[in-house]
Image 1: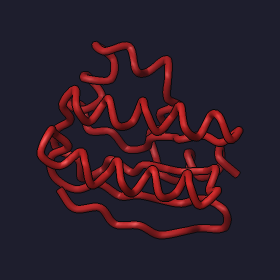
Image 2: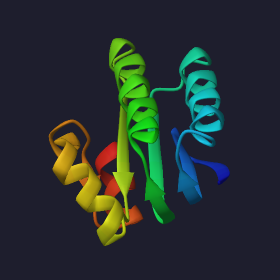
Image 3: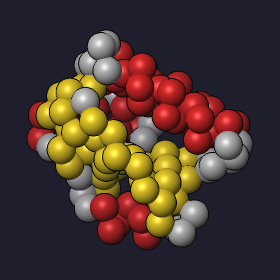
Image 4: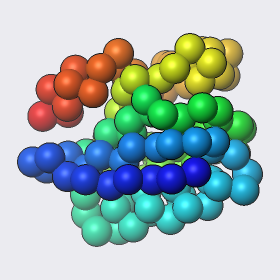
Length: 111
């Protein structure tokens, strides 16, 4: 999996590409933890090029959401493909994370 990071105003954007599973979730966990430790409170995870997410990937996102919530921050997700969105729906994570159809909608909501 490849993670691209950029910042727009006060929002950190992480674009994920490939598969988020047990072998790749550690790198996302490190990235999100470093953002939380740096005091960043707004993160957008762009899933446009995320092909697959496993329970390990869901666990990393849930852990990060808890970290950011402690700091009055938030994580939003955008542009989930149908397969990835289905995993979020089945696991009940759609009630935990705000999910937006487009990156622009998510950026506006986080602003």
